[in-house]
Amino acid sequence: MELLYGVVNMGVVESRKVKDPRQLQIDLDSYIAHVSKKYKDILVAPISVTLGDEWQLITSKPSECYNLVHEFQKLLWQNGLELYAGIGIGM
Image (cartoon, rainbow, N blue to C red; front, top):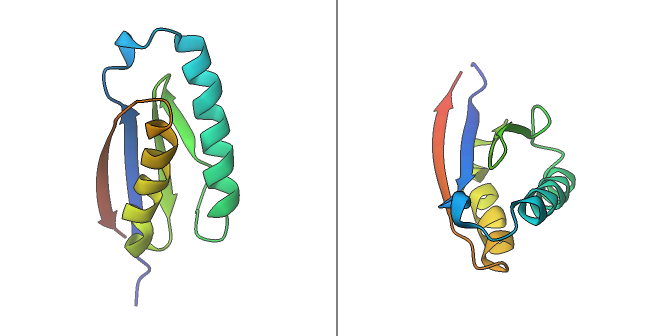
């Protein structure tokens, strides 16, 4: 049986309208560190920033993809920001 992976791409909705993009980047780095630590046992690789306001993660438990998205949603909601996400599952 082959192992399935979940890949999640996320980004901040309307990030160009953020008043302080530098602070957003600092916050995102903090959020990524927090989620990385909490989910270290199921992340296949470090969470990677693909663009300034977009990032990607790979998990060995596709069933946890939504929970990972929700973790970032809760963190971004604290700053009044929204998140978009795409989830892919495969080998």
